[in-house]
Length: 438
Image 1 (cartoon, one colour):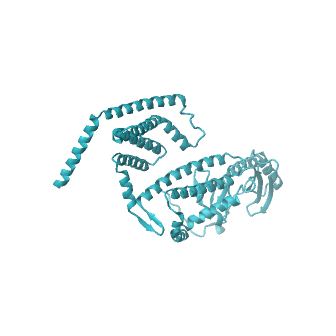
Image 2 (image 1 turned 90 degrees about the vertical axis):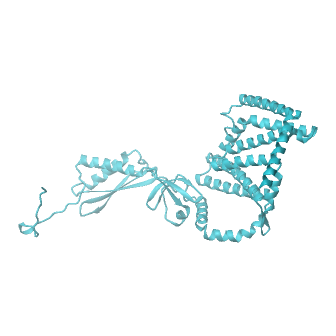
Image 3 (image 1 turned 135 degrees about the horizontal axis):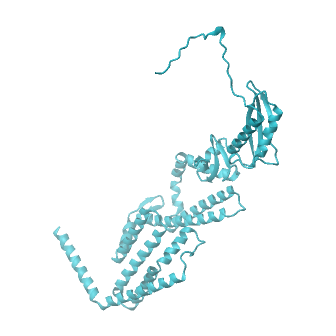
């Protein structure tokens, strides 16, 4: 314990003497002056850039993440210029004199570079944990580089390894692969979102083709990003073949439903049986398809609810598509009248009432037929066409209310159940009493 304390005291004394000698050296003040000059130039450069560039219209046609990244980069112009000038000064002084005489410039350059990386990386991240992780990592790497322990730390991380087949896994390899995968996936997300916006703005493509192209582009870009990231860190993809059997078993057992829904989604997009915007009835639920995802489709009902239906159910179950080939919809209304009414007049009134509705198609006249002589009265069926199934229940309600008004005007009555009770012998077969509440 005493030896450790003695070593610590010697280290602190040595460090203090080194710092004192550095401050007393004229090279310290030269470096400090160069840093002040770089800071002044950086400040003037940022002011000039802000005066020449309109931040509100900068990169307006670019994807949103890239647009935000460029704006943060322009906003960090002073840090970038300062770091660049200090690095140049450090290189010049290293070649002109001893490297130790430009140590302060090296520290300032690494700290400025770390700050710039943190500012740019965290500008495109929304996860608080990842932002803190990136910040701590950048400062940690900068600190190790300043004290000259970065290479030793890298060697230490690369010394621990697990060999699986032909693959050598080390902590350093996993860190590099994770960082490159995050960058590759971020760029892939930007590229796929940009492609999606372009495809959705193309009027020549049907909605189902648009969704299919977007899915193909996303999967292709994701595959390319993973392959490039793994190849960049030196991972041979053939070395991963040892895991193919386990992955196949996992997909066959654990991911069976996910794979089935994914394949079903591709089938639905290819055969165009359903597409975004279609009005469908699935079971007891009716609504319009608002989105088609990899695993499910979203059906928006008229009351604010959204049903998430797995793609496999649409392939294996019965689905009513009201707008599959034609949006024209036949509306059917069943009603009845008593036997005192003229059935021909009833059919005429019903047809005229349906024709008067603004959503009824004029090219297809309504039709009303007598379907049954029932016990309680005559039964009729009125049919007419509307151009779109949206709001079909409202149309039926409007026509039935108008038909009720027409029957009232013409004195036509709608039958309702009537029951007659005949009492024989002048008395009820069972004596009943009525209790009057107190």
